[in-house]
Image 1 (cartoon, one colour):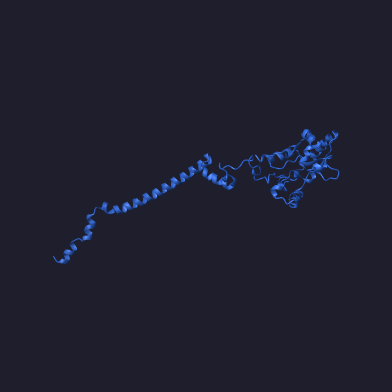
Image 2 (cartoon, one colour):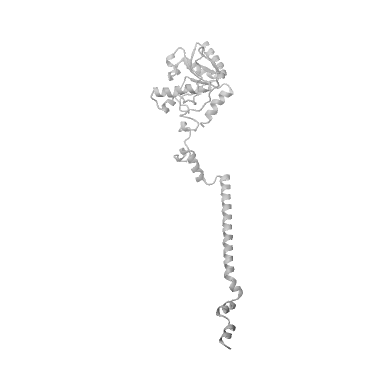
Length: 274
């Protein structure tokens, strides 16, 4: 037998190596690789599923039990910076800082709507002082009752428009060289005066004009009569001593609260400061 024949009948080393390895063993590397990839994919999907469940549970806990207070505190601080400076994380109460009690007040004064012109009537012969019809009727009854006791009111100011209040606040502030906070102690900014409502009136004593718009008005007979009798006509003092708005004491400033609209106008506004 020649070498060529021997060569054809003798298997190559590489062929013997392949044939000698059992089929199951030859295929194992490929099977293991496929199984490994499948396991990895399964693990990734499980982790994603667990993450989704955890996220859903955290949202449910937050909505139902207010978990994650740190997040809530951060949001609260953004919305109310005063809380950040408070040791307890709660903004100062009206009792400690009445002028900062609500974002709806301005320098301690509350916003009020302007009365419609058609609802205003004169309470002085020259028409310089006007009130809403219901308030004007009760004021006239009160003035007549006081006159029967020898007390004569001097109406100083009633309804004031926002434009009127612009002058009273800004022009007078400039004339007196007052800053805004100081001016706000005795006069409301435009849009924030009770006089806009047509329910408020400033009164003087006809026998003591020198006390007009002065704390000394409290010493007059007119003020003493009002203290004793004004509530019978549904008028009340707007800014007594140490009032919670921080406005200076104004014994001359009275407001009507004798019907539903006037009551809601003032007491809904005041509830904003609680």
